Image (cartoon, rainbow, N blue to C red):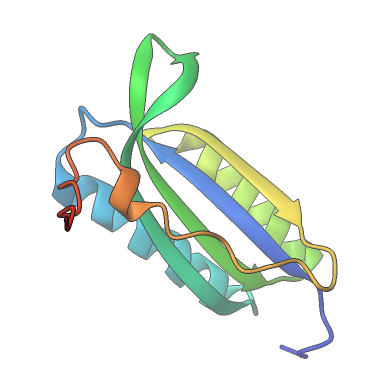
Length: 121
């Protein structure tokens, strides 16, 4: 995939009631789909279990993942179709990044159940 192609962000909100193995498989399947349809993975960020801004399908928290990739229109259509019918995904969003967009933040430390950093006096 050409480096001048647009980069896309895929934000996945996975159901926390699903087994961790199932959630890992969903993310792996998405990465395989990206590769199989001519896309190229740029980055993957596991933001962990976080509270949602509002309940989604009666769930107050979700397992957040951000996947960045180069894509073709064929890949975007395949992702949209596949993600809509995949059990364990409660919400997803794909956006095209503008050139010069900063790197995503590291949100893993603020996830639900994450250990608080030690405070030095």
